[in-house]
Every structure is written in structure tokens, then in C-alpha cells.
Image 1 (spheres, rainbow, N blue to C red):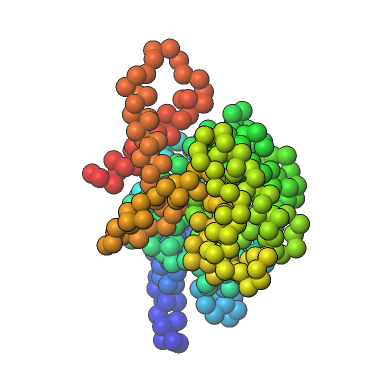
Image 2 (spheres, rainbow, N blue to C red):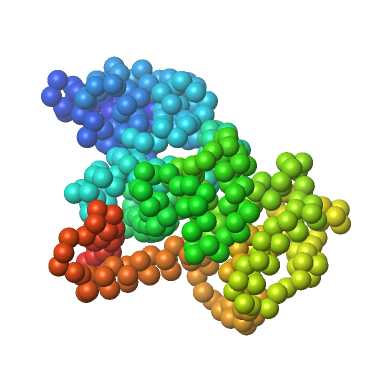
Amino acid sequence: AEESTQSTGEIVKGLFGECPSGLIAKKDFGSVTKAVGFPLYWKCPFFEACSSGEACSIDDFKKVWEDLKASCHDEASQFVRILSKGKRQHLEWGDFRNLIQDVIDTHPGMTFLDDAPEFHARYIETVTARIFYSTTRSWTYKLGRGELREGTFLKTLAVLEDEPDINQVSDYFSYEHFYVIYCKFWEIDTDHNLEVSLEDMRRHADGTVNPRAIERLFQGTVTPKCTDKLTYMDFIRFLLAEEDKSHPTAIEYWFRVMDLDGDGYISLYELEYFYQAQLEKMRLLGVEECSILDCICQALDLVRPREDTKITLSDVKKCKQPSQFFNIFLNIQKFLDHELRDPFSNKDGETPLTDWEKYAAREYDDLIADEEYNKQYEYEDDFEDEEEERMVMGQLAKSAVETYTK
């Protein structure tokens, strides 16, 4: 280990020695990052931990590097110390901004965004929200070293260096997934102020999400406090949870929504409360109603709670079909689709995809098809600002596809 450290020091000393005045610019710091054994896309935060200017000296580097060797003994602790600049034992949302901006600026699969800086901030917010949604196991919006060790983010970040197609990195960085999320938000954010009201949220997915569940989103159940507006970041968490209710965070998300009194249980009363709204939707749709008793029995059979009259979070996490359980009470269309499905429709041998990945792929294809259709029947008069932005996003998405198929 000592020989390896000495070799690393000699390589780094040589890199600084090759540069004018012995200073390495920020844009060239990838060579130093790789020399010390870090993944390439640590380069921006690593540079910023070493220097606050436009270039870094070897003395600046040594100070940080010696501190990392002395106090951080694994990748997760090193990453937290670098991004927080040694100030915290956890990471917060803003710590990821420059790292993700560097991915936009330097990853070969993101060149199509060079001429569209107006979308950079939204992409950064989307990736950040997905990191915290998938990696944190608490509701404090703080990401700790233990969570990084257990999660997939650091491995995914390392993959970026060798994967030129950003859309193949589906866990966090996919532009296609960002495009789907932002378009879904754009559809209901009618005044485009990056906030949505209760009425806006009720229009999502043509109103198929239970309106009583939508109301709960504004009552501090899944946000830090009660609010009359949800932010774009709040919407990202909602959409991820809505489209893949089997994800561990989604299970906690919807459990919080359905636990009306916050006692840690979903009671029979709470099941009935949410199902009443589902019955109203069935009547409006003119479909055959499923009785409350039958559906509650179906839900209890799915979850098999330890206590017959109330369901704990642990019960739902042990359930093999949490999505089916939640959809009975929270999404009328998904509930009816499941009831009417062909039980023999599942095909063996298909590549396993998460519910979120299936949804994102389907919606992305539909959005691109809509853009193609609109382009064919484009009117000569000027588009409104929001339609123009939507078209630009569609063109960027097409550019991304063309980049990877050349």
C-alpha cells in the first residue's frame, strides 16, 4: 500500500510539473482525479475541494489528499468529505449541483444540450431529486455515508465514464427520463412558475390519482411542512412514487399518505376513506363497482398483516405486490387495469425492467410521436412560448437519440 501511495504521488507530481507555473486548470483536473484512483466524474467537486480559484497547485492538492487519506477509509466517506468540503458528515441537495453541471458540460452523451442552457437547471434538479429519492432512507433530505455505501449512486457515477449513451444510465442521469418527468410537470404547471397547486395536481394523468390522496400531498405528509404549492422537486418525488409503488421509498411515501392520523398504522377506516373516492370514480366512468368489503378483503389478503384490523409499514414492505395493494385505493385506472388484465400476459425471458423504467420508456415514445405529429401539422402563425419550449425539448430529445444511433 505504501508503494502504491508513493507511485500515486509521483504520478500526480509529474502531472503538475508538466503544467505552466505548476498549476492545473479545472478543466484538466480529470487526470489528477484518475491518478489518485477516483472515478472521472468526481473531478469537479474534487477540484473545488482543493481550490477556490481557476487552477490548483500541488500544495493545494496535497493538503486535501493527505486529509482524505488520514480521515476517510472508504469511497463513501471520501465522497461526502469532498462534496461537503469537509464541513459535514452528510450531503445536502445543493452539494450535487456542480457535479451534475460538469456531467452536462463534459459527458459525450450530453453535447446536444450545449445550445440549450435553459434546461440545465431543470436537469440538475431532476437528477438531484432522483439521487435523494433512491438513496436516502430517511425524510430529512440529508444523504449520509451509510446510505451511499448501501445505495447504487456511486457505482452509477463511475459507469458514466465508460458509457457514452447517457440514456443507458437509467438510475439517475437518463435524459429521456428527465424529458418525461419535465413534460409531465409542464402539462399541469399552467402558469409555468415551477409550482403546482392542488387543482393542478388533480389534473395529472387525467385525474386517475385518488383526489383524497392528492389532498394529502399538501398536508405535510411527504413534504417538510403543509403547503398550498408543490415545487418541481416535490413533483419528481410524487411521479417516481406514483409510477413504481414497489420501490422502498414509494412504499413509505404512500403509507404516509394513507396513514391519516399518523399513528403508524393504516386502519380499516382509512382503507374505506380512500376507497370511497375510488367508488365515486367508478360511477363516473360507468364501470361495474367493486364493493368496499370485497376490496378491503382483497387488500388484506395481499398484505397479510400481523394484526387483522390494521396494517403496518413493515407489513406492506413484506408484501410481494405492494403496487397492487396501493392502486386499489390510490389510482382508479391502474386498479381497473389490473382487474381486467390477462393473467397469462407476462412473458418469460424478457429483460426485467422496473415499473418506472417501463413507464418512462412508454411515455417517452408517446411524447416523441406527439412531437412528430405536431411538426407535420405545424401552423404558420407563431406558437405560444410554452408550446415553443415543449417543441425545443422534443427536438433535443430527438437529437439525443440521433447522437446514439450514428
